[in-house]
Image 1: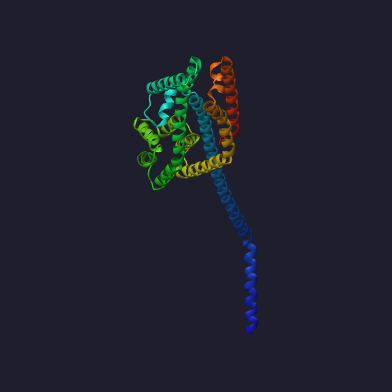
Image 2: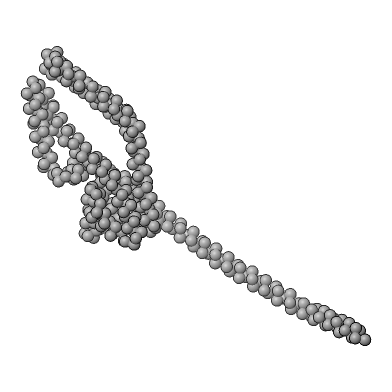
Length: 334
C-alpha cells in the first residue's frame, strides 16, 4: 500500500512538472532569445566602441605622420637653402668658424704681408719680376685661405669627437627630469670646446627670445656639419610633433658614433691612395729643388727664359688637373 501511494505521488509530480514545462516553454524560450539578443547587442556595442577607438587611433597616427612628413619637407627645403648659402659663404663669415678672433681686416693685412714676403724671397732667389709676382700672389691669396680652411676642418673634427658625448649628457639630463633648456645650459657650461662655445650661442639666442628649434637651426650656420643638421631636425620635430626626446637623442648619438667609425674605416682604407697621391704630387717639386741645389745653371733656364716660363705654367696646369682628379678618386662623402 505504501509503495502504491509513493508511486502515485511520484507520477503526479512528474505529470505536474511536465504540464508546467509545457505551459512555461514559450516563456522560457522567449527569455532565452531576449538574453541572447541582449548579449549580441552588448557585444556589438563593445565591438563598435573598439572599432571606433581603433579608427581614432589610426586617424591620430595618420595626422601625426602627415605632420612629421610636412615638417621634414619644410626642413629639407630650409636645409637646401642653408646649404646653398653656406657653400657661398663669404670669407668674413668663415673666419669666426676657425675659433679665433680673426677679422677681415687682420686677414687682409696678413695676406698682403705674406705675399710681399714671398715676392721679396723670389727676387732674392733670382727669379724674374713676373715669376716673383706670381709666387707672391699665390702665397698671399692661396696660402692664407688654405690655412683658414685647415683651421676650420680641425675645429670641426674636434666638434665631431665631443658632440656625441654632449648628446649622451643631454639624454641623461632629460631622463632625470630636467627640461631641454636646462640640458642645453648644462652643455654650454660643462662641455669641452668647441661644443661648449656653440651651445653657449644657442643659450644666448634663447635669452634673446629665439625659440630652441630656431636657435639649434642657427648652429648649422656657425658649424656647417650634417651631424649638427641632424640634431636641429630632431629638436624641431620633437617641438612640433612631440615624442620621446631622450630616446631620439640617444639614437642620434649612436648614429653619429657609427658615422665616425665608418669615416675612420674609409680613411684607413684610402690611406694608401692618399699617400701615393702625396708622393706623386710632391715628386716634381722635390726633384726640381734637388736639381736646383746641385746644378742651378742647368735648371735656371726654366726661370729666366720665356719658354721655361711657358713650360712651368703648362706643367703647373697639368699637375693641378692630376691632383684634382686623384683627390676626387680618394674623396668619399659619408
